[in-house]
Length: 166
Image (tube, rainbow, N blue to C red; front, side, top):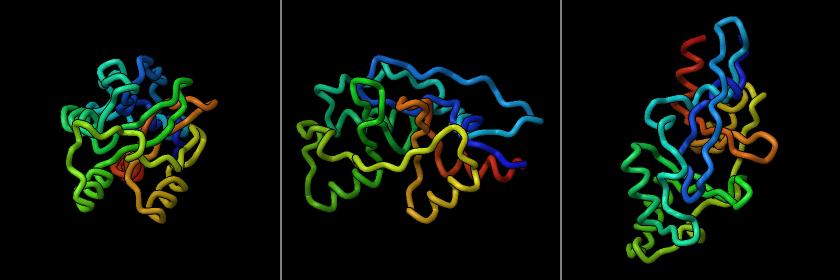
C-alpha cells in the first residue's frame, strides 16, 4: 500500500525558538494509506515541545547543540515568526563549523549557520517519493509543512521503518 507523509510526521520535531507546539495528527489506521505525518512519531522527538527550546532572538549554535543532545535528535528547525520553517541546523552543520575552525559556539548566532534552502515535504507525499528525494540529495531530516506551517519532521530512519512495515 502506498504510504503518504501525513501519517508519518505526527511527531513535533525539535523547534528552536518557537513558543508554539505542533498539533499531533490522529494515528493512521492499518487500512488507510499512511502519510508522512506519522513517521515522525518516534518517542525521542514526539515529546519535545517547542517551548523547551531557547528563544530565537538569542539562540546560538551552542543552544542548538545542547537541544539536539538533550533530546537525542540530529537536527533542529529554526522557525520564522509565523511558524514556517526558516532553516534547519543539523549535526553536519556542526561538523562543518568544526572543520572551518569555528568553535565559539556560545557566541555564534544560529541563523548564519543554518541551512535556509530546505526541501520540505507535504502530508500527501508518498514515503517512496520522499525516500528517493532524501537519498538523491543526501540528507536525513525532512520538515513536513502544511499550509506554510511545519506539522512535523521525518528522518530517513522513520521512512525506512515505514517501508519495512509495508
